Amino acid sequence: MSSSGAASSQASGSSWTAFLKSIASFNGDLASLTAPPFILSSTSLTEFSSYWCEHPALFAAPAKEADPKKRALLVLKWFLSTLKQQYASRSEQYGNEKKPLNPFLGELFLGKWEDEAGTTELISEQVSHHPPATAYSITNLPTGVHLEGYNAQKASFSKTINIKQIGHAVLTVPNPSGGEADTYLITLPALHIEGLIFGSPFIELEGATYITSSTGYTAKIDYAGKGWISGKKNSFTATLYPTGREKDVLFSVAGQWTKDFAMHAGPAKHASAATLIDSYDPAKVPASKLVVAPLEQQHPLESRRAWSRVAAAIAKGDLDLVSLEKGKIENAQREMRNREKAEGRAWERRYFSVDPTRPDGVLASLGPIVGVPEHGDADKTGGLWRFDRVKAERAGRELRSLTAEEQAKVARELLGQ
Ligand code: HC3
Image (cartoon, rainbow, N blue to C red; front, side, top):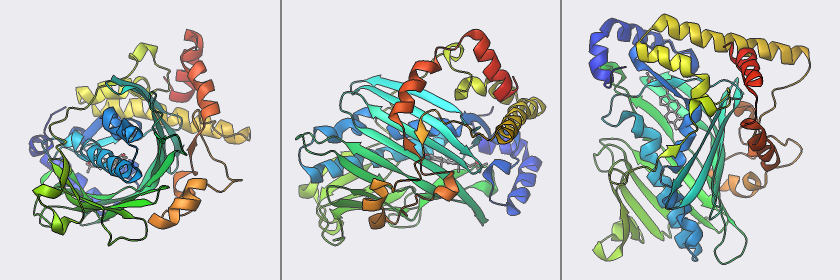
């Protein structure tokens, strides 16, 4: 596959024009977009969960800070540091954002980071297919800092593709002074695709998101594209304040989430060299490498193994083979759903559960502060998904213990392979 969307699209001008025409009548279903071959990615959306933790040391840092407002600032710094990975890493030079693979129900992406922060484990699972939703759990083992969440996308077309993210993340940070752990509720930014008309799509973030904590602090992040605030791409301003007192700014942060940003004590209008606390340049800090098991050791439902034939077809640029291999997975999945229906059972998620009998404690207490409904938009994500430690322990034991025959059976029945 070409490394530049713009260059490839020149070569495939007519298919890009056809694609643009098709998105003008877009029905909101991202999976149904028939994109030209050069815009197909061989990475599934289940892998995107890893973007939350490409700098494990920043993720774990709040667990070592005794002052709750500084902890909240470190959480904000970590969150801001993830944005480049989440929204610009696939499109480093801009204009190369591709269409990811649409995960099947039960698809897994598992990995770990081993670096100066110790071991940090990642579990990502496709918990719903209609509507598509991915859930994830990330744990830094030495500190116990834990992130979990789920997300889906609601897309619409108006001048371009606009995407609203449904879902939220919850970060738990053990209190270094031994008290109760902090809980942070994190909302997700809306985005739109720029550059479509030129065949060089990239993401811009818009609106505002929040991080509110059980310790009584809230951060608000305002996103702006080129032409707003600083006239620079990927700009943002953020403030951290005691919850409910937005004007009493304790810390302010401003800059670009792809380049560099500065963190100051007090409001931005008083920012000076004397108020500067810290600065961070996402472009200068290399991501820690995620370790994923070799394909042959993976469970058949693990993303890279399951999609390996499709990925090979994409790499060859053979669209017929891409459709054939995708079709095998889709048909097998459809048949599985029919069997489940006939037998009156539902697909058992391996790591996440929904508990409709109990109100969610985090959303009940922190949701109203940042506009996350207590139902967690479960109707749009197939459920209010929470990491299930009991299930996870079982899955961890069982996942890598399948015999070759059992693996072949899973691949045949669930993936048509
Ligand atoms: C919109 C998107 C799929 C969703 C991606 C999400 C929101 C997934 C959760 C991650 O944490 C953050 C994230 C980053 C990028 C988002 C993708 C960008 C493009 C993709 C569309 C489905 C593709 C649209 C097609 C095309 C040709 C314009 O790229």
